[in-house]
Length: 293
Image (cartoon, rainbow, N blue to C red; front, side, top):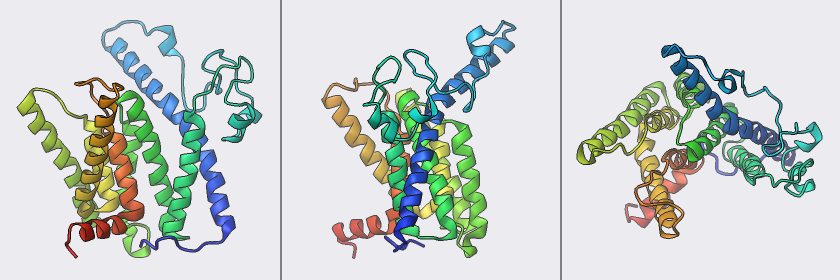
């Protein structure tokens, strides 16, 4: 299905980029609030089990839409015209309009990455039935990767719907709604979960430590459902290589202490997305370098 850099009208790329900026703004909300919602739910459940009162802070209803976005420093609600993706950050010079506290670079970065990756997806797949779903795949991976990087949590509310959507879309493979057929998707999902499950338990038996979380198993299962079992070796190789390079660099520079865990989800997400948009090209380049052609 990959049609590397298919030609589309310029306005299509502009529209997708603008929509990607808007989605990126929403992803920032998900990245910030979803872990807090999860933690509040866990604390409330624990308090209920222990028959203890839920603390007032955690009893407040927090969702992706409530309360309104506000400055994390002074608490002032953000006005709609101060919440325009990227543009508002530039016009405000990266500071809160009320207290002038610096705004995290994460916000424009996520918006720009969401837009750029959306443009690449359109360039690769063109105006096909699969493109819209590939955008959902892309944006979900961005949110999951950022949450895992910041909190070492991979929310089931993101990963499991991605898994089931990949399996369901495989039913429409012949109509162009998926890259792989149902059998390949099912084997990919099962194989993705099983391979990391085995690595997890082998590492635990050998060292007595847990090397990764169950969220990583589920994420690789989701990638297998979308990309097929044949893509799993490439995803694992690229994610392991990226994790080793970044982890080694962070330890060498003192930004990561030895023995301190580093999330694996971001590298799985990156490798999965690269396999989606350029798997054939990467595979061909590797075969050429390895002298397999």
